[in-house]
Length: 341
Image (cartoon, rainbow, N blue to C red; front, top):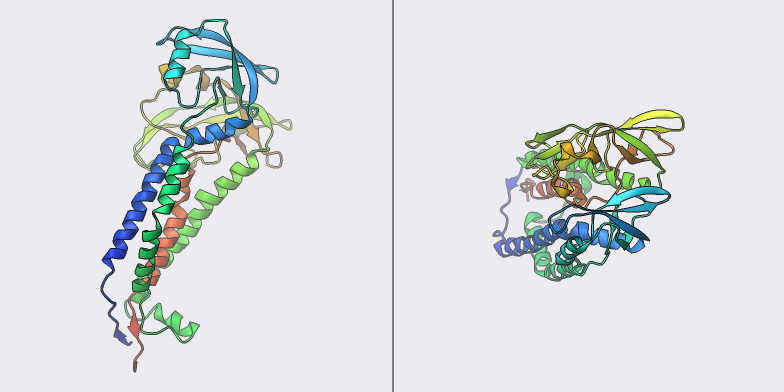
């Protein structure tokens, strides 16, 4: 079997630098989660269409504020003022009067809503934090190199691929090989299901035609976990019926990033705009009209929402992380010297 080889001292300084780098990345990811949607909305709004909106409801600072606009011959309603929804937005709502005409910007695709002001003064925060984080990752890269040398320790390189393959099963190395291999296979599967498939679906859905659809199911319940986010949340199992090519269909996939039949995981409290409970909101009532986007080649596939989800990076990272973890386990397997060495 060969004798067990002992590695050099564990590089604790390398691990410390790696943890420091990971802390920076986690901070940047958290800020991306907080500000990413606003930044994407600001970028997307650069191509929105200018329109004239008319205030139809204005009840002061604490009252309901809504305006109407016409897009492609259809009447729509909105309430969003700007991306940041700060003090200027509150002042505009407080001073608005019914019948007042305001300049607004509408998403030409029809599923992104409207804004009275598409400016976003805080757009630079997120790119700046990522630049600083990347610049401070140099010590972490050096630490990764030192840890890799410790993990890959062996007295000499295998003389052939056959010798390398034997090293995977000598002594207790087979345990690390099985665990690492399972993690790598699971990571590749998750990479397809959680990363590639939804991203390709989102990319292809950008050109899908829009059709009218009706909400036929929409119960709301509380999920204690088992989905995303794991901490649980209020879930809507939505279903929309539509006609395409003279045939009726029903879609349960709210967006390219749906999770099985559970499409929405909402953070509590369960409220939409103007403080209405989601079950009581006419926007998502049974029989309410919506716009769905249908695949022209596969009419049974459709999304009620095709916007980019700012949480994709957290869910989509599960596959690559599992694969890299499995690779690290295989690389760190126990080392043995061949008999006679």
